[in-house]
Image 1: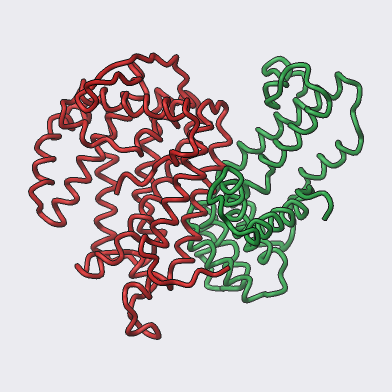
Image 2: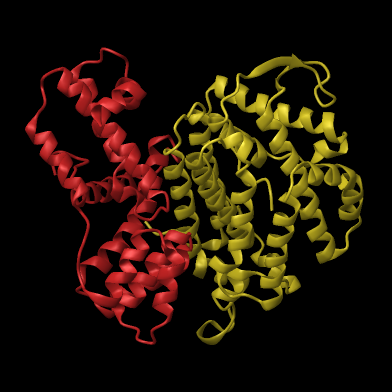
Length: 300
Length: 212
């Protein structure tokens, strides 16, 4: 589910790129420090985006150091240290990774999932104890997701709802946000990011899910291979629903961009704008139009 | 109000300009911010009230700066006022009540009310669509508003809402292109985007391209 939120690197300024990396390395180091080396493997760019977003609200002086790490033993890199936002985001990154593995395990019983779960189990217990009510909230939403899957929910909006809400709620960590206004803004951005991730992921999985027969809300909502569309293949189906999915996804991105503008301080506008307007749009179109383009005639 | 703003916030900061900026610069910054926080931009967003208070802040800062320069200009003021009076009052009774609830952000109550009737006129679909829109259920919202517009093709409000949803996506894309997304984009698409934005701004009382 994760790893879709990426910056468009060539369009970043060098200083923005460095800062982005400082956040990324900061998250990685923080995970290693508090939760062990294995935890660091779960890091993704999504979390970096969340950390930048919340740092707009929780304005802390950035403590920047140059350090080496296992992956880059020779060249020192800029790392963000002792940052409350980084700490919080690395915690929820681990929780989400753990539950994602658990979900995979329920689906396919793979060995990798179990190994990961075992490695993260202790860190997870520790984090759950640290934030009251968070584990319950996550479990509640994940249960809802499962229920919708079992029911074979055929509405994309409804299917995406629990994950969208989950992300919205996770990003609202009151000690960091300090005002009701900021909570509302971050919550709505989180909601739309969650929705976007869920739907992008669903569209990306269409072929795979058609083969395995796994649940996919896009397939169900647009009645794959039924009625007047009897006899279509996965590619034709994707072409048929592309514009509709594109509409929803772009709408989510538009909302994220607009809502971000409501924040009181926007110190990282360069990077966040790059991610929201360039990186996420590019990802959307890559997934929609595919690398192999699904032999479509793109309308002018 | 103007005084409160002057004490709480530096009006130059609010407008995002340097202190001592020229009148031209102030006006330019002001115009850009108004476009950004215009209520029409946030109609589909549950945080519309925040955008409104942002805009109010911008207005106050602008007014303060202009007053201090003794160049308060009646035209600008009358233009600004008209943006606030765009509340609609149509149709009495049941649906009016639902509209009030939606406007107040009382989505659950509004939905309950709507579901209590078995009558399904175009307005029902329209309002249901609005509720979906504010909840973030964009797909359902579009389908419902589309149904309403199809049932009453001559209703401006429904058609306008549909156009607005499409426009939201165009606005986002235009911003992305402005930032350098897909530089090798064909000219035709850019023109189309500009044209759409211009139409949108004109409907809202402003203008994007002055000459048309």
